[in-house]
Figure 1: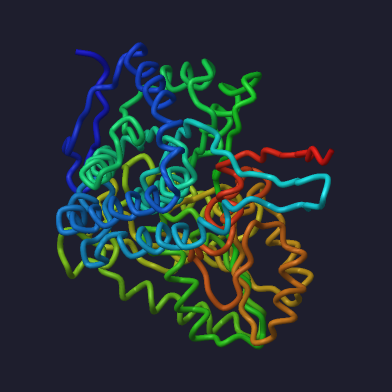
Figure 2: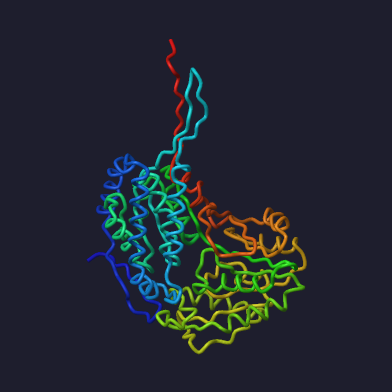
Length: 460
């Protein structure tokens, strides 16, 4: 037996699922099959591809009663939240709705002598490497538009959510998507590297750590394979003096704590105008003290364990270092905090940017709150980060939010909301958050290449 991938459940540390990785030869054969199937898939009418993809999405939805507890076992999200099908369906549906327009030829001009236009051509085989934190929604961001655009797809899912890709492939195949057109395979890091370096794929989309994204780019170096990445984040919230305080506290703290803080665009640091600071902190602490930490299979649980003890220990280390340096922790350790995956959600004040908890990605249920006196101070602090995914601005003045947003180094600017992915907008980042863009019209452009036609008419 070869190398085994094991999903260790954060509920109790048991092995919930395991799968054997495929051999190097089998992996390259899967890529060859995907490449061979691509031209036939792309030749199908666009509406047929759309219908098959959306039938696959619906088939995933039909599994939701099984998927929700399975996710709780694999990565710890409480069953009370009902899984991811709402966002999964919303994103796929939007990309289906805009496909005809987004993929349409771009007419440049036609007269008696010439016809000129630009077509959008699928790359070929798209390799999707998906993360565990929102395993269905992050995967569908690329899987649906890639297939609709005429690419074939090979999906490699995270070990922590080992069964997600398997379920997606089974659902899509049952709906009529050919097996060679959409494949889920279990890969080791070494074979993944070999596939990319060996030009097995025509485009790679990776969501995960900065180190993982660097590994993808190194593997692709010299192959001219396109690589799109969404990597780390340290997303800020800024509450201005004219903000709706209650709405700001409710949304930003939920954005910091939902999914045990394991959100790509989760709020990890908050800057509050000095006139609202004390009230904001008091309300934030009250909210977090109302959470129930516990087994995610219990419908009373509002915050479950982190997906892995290692992740929880990193958050504990950041909190401990901050407190040792003078920060104040406002939440007493909960009885359910076992020193392992079950972690007390924490609000910190007295923090500075000298502390790792305000610089490094935490990806857990902790948020530091700082007092500011001006937009300029808040902008400087928000930009004092190696990451740039989203920023959440709270004010009643839309023009002010736009002015501040123009100065923040980020991929998305929210006003009076946070932690939401609008499929009509490009999901993108800057700095060490990576390069590329998913969803929206731009998502289709990144999953295709332009091909120009300059046709001279014979008139004589």
